[in-house]
Image (tube, rainbow, N blue to C red):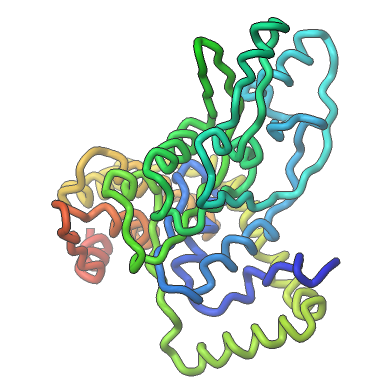
Amino acid sequence: MKNERMKYPFTSIVGQEAMKEALILNVISPGIGGVLIRGEKGTAKSTAVRALAELLPAREVVHGCPFGCNYSDEDNLCTLCREILDQGEELIQVSAPMRVVELPLSATEDRVAGTLDLEHAITKGKKKFEPGVLARANGNILYVDEVNLLDDHLVDLLLDAAAMGVNFVEREGVSFSHPSRFILVGTMNPEEGDLRPQLLDRFGLSVDVIGEQDILQRKEIIKRRLAFENDPEKFIEDSQDEQVKLTNRILEARLKLSEIEPDDDTLGIAVDIALHLGVDGHRADLTLIKTALAAAAFDGKTKVENEHMVRAARLALPHRMRRRPFEEGHLDMEELETWIRNM
């Protein structure tokens, strides 16, 4: 294994607990809708995203499928896999590791969504589709660095695909669709510009990260990074126990998630929070509930507790508080947390 391909272990990242929690909760419950990580350079944003895939087990996919269709999910197969089944043939199952698919800033809409070959469709009478980034992202983590510098219509395209789980391409009356279920992670430096409020709201969670201010923690960051660069194989080997523990905890949480139902009290708290803060629409309420359910599952609980609502509020609400152009909404988290705990 080449050193440049070795990923810094997720469990060895010092601090940045909110960022790590937001990523983990999205892995447990992709329906949360992704996470936007905002912060200055050198705060482990990219490191955490790339390390996340190393925690997750291999996926069972259809052999030869350019869209990485989930072998066990016949209801969400691409057109090509469906045609194989319709012809009476069997799909072949293979394992594929989870990976991080990165979207370059220079990407065009065709490169992201894929392209249809109209000439081939007309002359051959059969659709020919050239897969794009959304095809490679299916079942994986889609990472967009400096997402605030991406054209708004491309961000819209990504968010639409993430929400629907399907990429639909149409050109001159010819259409093609394929599954595109992925965990969307965007990172950005606010000093280089922000996203429009409408786009901010569509990211499930948001985290603001800053450099570690505690002296001991800061020293530990340097110590671990130097150890990794000096002998990455040993550093990764030493972290394996913690990595395996976290992987198992995530897998257990995925299973437990389906067993937890939000009761009326939990729903009432979510609605009260949204009304109290004057949040527009219902996306905040839904995201708050989904995040709290994932947090409860991660803790091994059978029901959502107020503490889970507090943790969910920290991640799901701050970026939705913008009121008017050029005005940042104010969210007093300490006041809100005290209010939730006393409900």
